Length: 195
Image 1 (tube, rainbow, N blue to C red):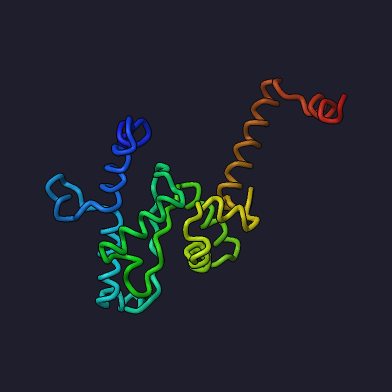
Image 2 (cartoon, rainbow, N blue to C red):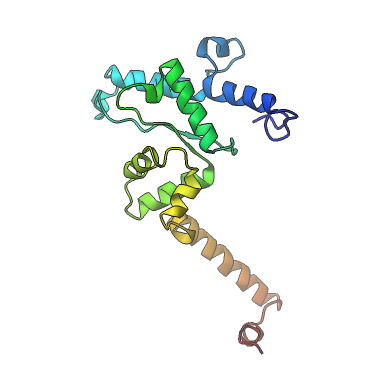
């Protein structure tokens, strides 16, 4: 994501130009600059391949419900306004949610991506979560707000493997501080008890 065009844009127009290119750059125009096209055109191409039966040998039926997701390493301004614009543009271009059995696109940051997979690891079906997120009442909501509104907060939004790594890191750091004489458990306990 070019910082000058989005994060430090001098005008709203600069940000819109970048967002339009990121999501909707025509694949034919993109080839000239060495790109494959906008993210939603690429997803729509995959939808067309599914509908043509190219993935039937992998167990994906031609008429399956499709839940498109874009994972962006930067925050692209996920908001109701962005979702409305994406939906309207898809309808105008006849792609993704304008097609039968394709839900509106969901944007995930890396944190959101981890959170939905953490919930899946705890038994919440990923597809059910995305269907719920793309219903009329929720489709304009930010993913983090959507998850927190359902009571999903804190540890349950972290993958168990990340929790284990964090606990291991803290344990090793505490041991190093003990060995270096920086940390004394008796003093820490007394201070924690108000002593």
